[in-house]
Image 1 (cartoon, rainbow, N blue to C red):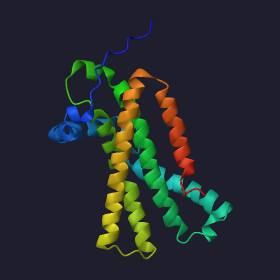
Image 2 (image 1 turned 120 degrees about the vertical axis):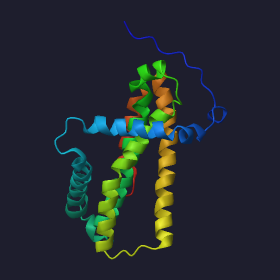
Image 3 (image 1 turned 90 degrees about the horizontal axis):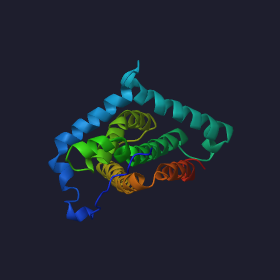
Image 4 (image 1 turned 180 degrees about the vertical axis):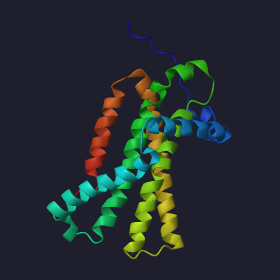
Length: 206
């Protein structure tokens, strides 16, 4: 017997406070984020070291295949820095969107048992992905400095604005697909197709 789907009254975001509940419940948001992080690392031997290992392995594969074998390294200035920057940002979008889409479904029992702002669930998933983005950004900054980059106020401001814009965009899509996934379980497959297209459609690849 299949589980009965919850009857949820949908309301416009601006009628329930918009982003205000996220700030009002920021302590709960951070606790949910830590919970997501602990579940992800639970049972691992290397723990947080995987936040460094995964992006480095991914970068090495792309650099060897796209840069060396296909020869893109010869036509793109500072190719290692270019491809690592793109991979880091794209991976945040993909991981955040997939995680946020599944957030309501995987926490359905908590939603039924406890009253709290529901948007905290996808927000905590995205914040967890943002925390995981820290190690790759540290590596990226070190590589950029080795390639001669000298930070200034304008470039730092543009970088911060770009990351915030991507985070807001991913959060909006995560909310949309997360709600849709409650009613239409094919949504996760649709998101999987979207993330595959996103990975291979960005200019980092070609």
